Length: 472
Image (tube, rainbow, N blue to C red):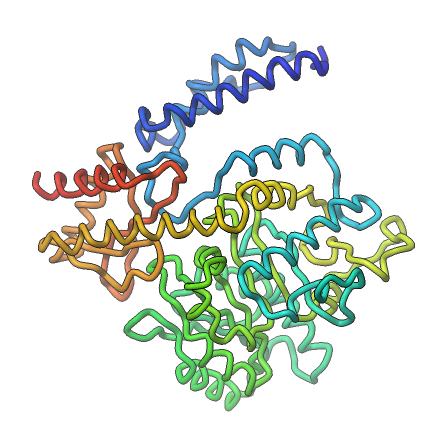
């Protein structure tokens, strides 16, 4: 039985209604499910059905199979991890993306897919204040810059780190007499786990640099590690600096790190997966951009804080040719007459296949405008400041560190055990969901505004839940 366009229209309207109803009633659901590992075994048959099933039966199963086990990331009282972006223009972009069903590995295979992504990379680069060297086009020119930069939508910031590390490795081996076994890269001990994983997959030694009292990697500490490695015959090739660490939203000192990397000819990659979205606001560019002129590559995730659905991780490089040469494999069946004069994104990623990733970005920016996105960033930061104020007013609590953006790190005064118990009690209420982390044997709680539905009343409710758990 085939689904024709008429049935698709009918079922599609019904699904849109279901999704809209879900969001309009989301605050009536618990934030987290009450299920245990393996719960799905009793709800889904052990083998697929042979005969077609009616859509009415499928719809009936959505609640028991999907919703009963959902952690509702878009719930107004979901405050853990980092945001998972969502907006209706982005959802509509995904509908068109999946409906078109194109595979944009080369310009020839999907001209609009390739060129809109290039345009969006330049749009966003300008929005967040990247140096002009990271753009495909200068001003309003229709000609690509020669030996210039450019951007690409990867699936995650983890992929961007891996890609840039492999590029730094190949470039070093091609241009120097260094052996692969001598190569070494650097990152803060507070860097995301994906940096260590990238080094492991790239087979490059990694040295984790101890952060200072503000959980920031500093230039002198990096330089000391580099000089020590050089003494032992190693070849430093790559440093990953973080703007907005996962645990505490701390910021590495990019100016100091950049100066050290420039001195030793080291690739400097900047991971701003979460915090990078704040760069669309001029007031955050003032301090976050210091050192941008020294970086080799930069990435952030619009799918975290910029209302774009996953996956949408933007990576820019100062020299796109170095990146594309690293991953260039050119079988006859993928060649085309324009490959010298344009971009083939197959050379900018690990895999070959890629969807029309830029549609949701284009839809969202056009519908909301830069001003609308700025308002969203400022709104969530204001909610974070309100929560921070509530913490300050209760002398049983203390802030773990300075709140620079929307994520607040705080703790109950006293032992780690007290905070671990509080974390479990709060999340077991199912009314709200917060995060936690531990740095240098200090356990603390993380509160990040994640949902576009969250307002000040939701934040007050979450704080009351936390206080009640302490009272009880």
